[in-house]
Each structure stands twice: as C-alpha cells, then as structure tokens.
Length: 37
Image 1: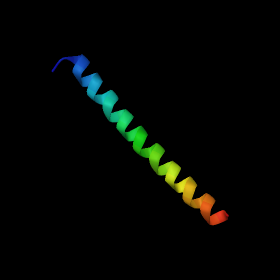
Image 2: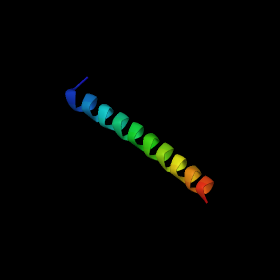
Image 3: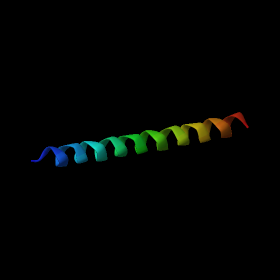
Image 4: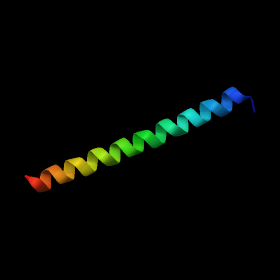
C-alpha cells in the first residue's frame, strides 16, 4: 500500500484512541465529581 494510506490509517487509529481516552477521562471526572458532591 502507498505510504499515504498507511499514514492515514495510523492517523485515524490515533484519533480513535485519543477519543476513547478523552471519553473515559470525562466519565471518570464526572463520576468523581458526583461522589464528591
């Protein structure tokens, strides 16, 4: 496959992982905030 396709797939994978981490962090922060209140 061309290098552009490989880098594009890698970029998509990084964005998906980053999005998943952001969602997990948001959920954890929301739960901790509710427990503190």
